[in-house]
Length: 379
Image 1: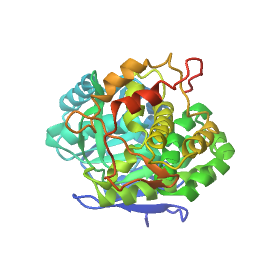
Image 2: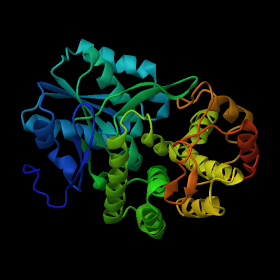
Image 3: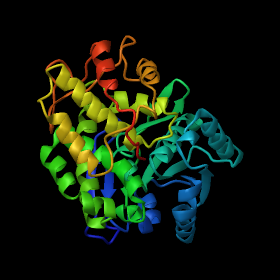
Image 4: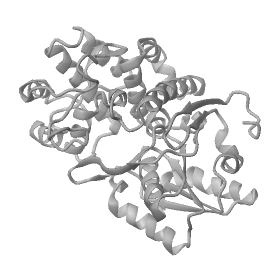
């Protein structure tokens, strides 16, 4: 970090089969992107991939800074939003790179939120059979979760993230100051994943998030930095132990089996964090109904999520029968059966029978039927 004069920058190392990579967390890091690219991902050319909103906010400035430092860089943008995370948009981006003459000595820079990280990462994983990628998350959901771990991919009609690849980045550059201007509802989407990290592995962190909810929702940079750093530390520990999700990494799917099904059943009309939060509460109620989860855990979880405006959706948003249909197509399914991560209590996953498990369909239907028809969805 000698090239970046900021003593407040923290570095968390993530283990990977291709070699460990650092996640750098520090306010003001984005201004040092040219130096960081030279240090961690030297290349003949760089393709910065952003959605059109982040491209105008940060992408054009990044290109200018890089050009001033003598780097060859081009900005490629796509329409903002989850509907762009498709094979069709992957085709558009790869065709533009081919037409632009980008070779194997290219590095792709994913500058933006979770959609950008997944899509640009998948382009990098497949372009000319693979070129390096640098993840530069600008949203909370990307900083605390999506940019760390090497998962890339796109959504298809059958469900979310069903086509993709593991493609670890050379470095992750997380600058919490870029989240300061996010509206509260967008900040909440990322904080859902932070709550998940606390719920599965760190009860003290879970409590701290609830206590700092006001500052986190209000854009307090110091509080945001603390949350980003702790979430990165938790995810780095898990990913370093199990990069390809053959065992322990499954705990990160808490809330995501039902959550992804809700998201798909709602045609992605609600935020990822909104769907995952509902999924966490429902999967915890599922655990309680099965006698696996300590009674009262779901209410405790729901109470904390409510401080971020999360945790509940309306049955009018996602039809229960559609949710059940999408559960069968979940990418984490084994032998055609969806699997669920169940808590033992806040801060601890029940792992006596493996980190995820099948449960009776009737039990799942039972908790889904408890979704109220008059609640208001957020996100």
